[in-house]
Amino acid sequence: MSKNKNQLARFRRIHELLALRKGTVVKPDEFCRACDISRRTLDNDIAFMRDEFDAPIIWDKKRQGYCYERPFDLAAQVALNMEDVHRLHVAVETLAQFEHLEVFRDLRDTVEKIRKGVSGWVRNTGAAKAIYFEPVQYAGTEYLPSLLRAIEERRKIIFNYQSFLSDEPTACELEPYCIRQHDQRWYVVGHSPQYAYLKPFALDRITSKPELTKHIFDQPNFNPDQYFQHIYGMHTEPIEHAQEVRLLFTPLQARYFVSRPFHPYQLVEERPDGSIVVGFKVCLTIELIRKLASYGNEVIVLAPEQLNTTLRAFFEKGLVGTSR
Image (spheres, rainbow, N blue to C red):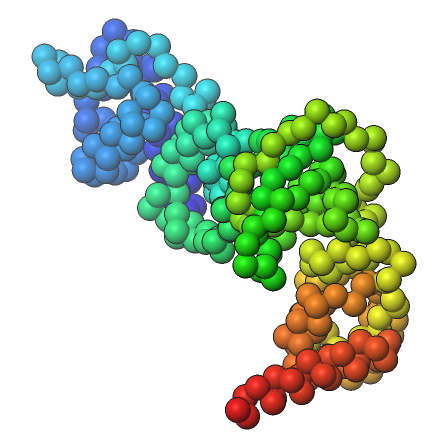
């Protein structure tokens, strides 16, 4: 039995003894014999039950023993086994990554209460510090409530936007369709008159609070799952630009790719040496080029030739840069 399960069993035994001794007290040595623990462990367990479960355990100085100050139901406080607790620990820590967002403001106290209760069980275990999340880009998330309202009410918004390609912010109009989180950044995607296709705007580059206008746009024929199925990353392009891509992964890299593909794919061929050929329809964006370049010589572009040529030029330009 694990340490945590032993601890939970002791809590239940302590509770049973206290609940049975109505009108009297339980001596410390009785607890120690019943739970097979030292006096120090007993003191720690009782302190824990008081702090984490609000157990009304008091010390009766006159009778030199412990008792409940009022009726108490430990089962109502401890209804989870340790496997449940660790699952909840993961869930709470995951949700906590977004508690800074204004849209989660009303959940912060609730998340903190659950975290406090769960952390009490895992505080002294490896699980307490076993979960680490990569930092998420928080800049611009303060605009999420306004953007979500605009999407719900189908209202056009205006804001200033600082593109990496421009030295000064420019005024933008947008009919927002959805919010997307990608690669530690948040984006709002929609139709802008400045562009002939749906345009993503990174929230961290919006330099003024989005202002909702009185203009109501028509319900868009837009499905995020369908739209982004032909796009890797956030550089959106019309679906007509998507091309059939074929990639050959080396045996080792094939295992990594299959375990966590960067894009929905079809397995075209599985070769005897373990290498695989996969295919998908996608737009040839700079983000796709960079992703394929990150694999180095562990991926070969079989089709289309345009992608092969672009990737080769990408590497050649890098070699020229290193020779300066």
